[in-house]
Length: 271
Image (cartoon, rainbow, N blue to C red; front, side, top):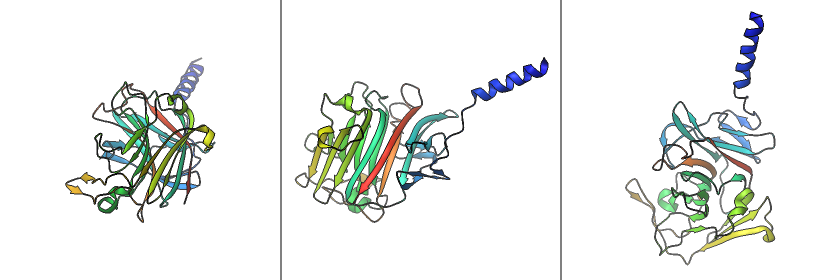
């Protein structure tokens, strides 16, 4: 009887353990996703954006058996961690397409989904070569248009429309599966969002264009200023990036206190 009791305790303990994470697509500090290799960002000291701590734990970033990328915001040992992946391959002008799955309308007001380009070495000339598709309430729990398009650098104010919000009434289309893309050239950036996994014009529910008629802006950071820029250009080391992070000035973790998940079904780049 005593042996049966011990066995029962062991079985209960095993049932409570977290199952092992999927191994598909995860090779050390990289994931293989949508035909590309991506470096996993990891930091136990605060880093931007946010600033945040970033986890490379295999439960927090992995590719599942369907080939979907999973990123999490999670608490470990009393500290909240965000996640980010960075393409190993460099990209330039062209069309970037991301398909996501989940509810990014009814999200905590202090988390951000970022689908974007970035270059750590082009700050002065090109303001980090940054073009963004984002989901966030930016700290406002009443904010309803969580899907936004942005061209960096950002100069806040009514005089300059560097950021566009999806129009009211289309929010339901980015609950479930939706596809978001931007086409980046030296004279025009065109953003489009579609219902489901389609990029057919009939399935488009939001769009925005940003051209050279906008005034130039300057990016300021760490006491330095970039050159005046209208449309940033890619540089030799410009990557695609996907991140999932916290606005720590609102709260150190998601305001609902829950582990968060971002699912990216696919990424595609066409030069």
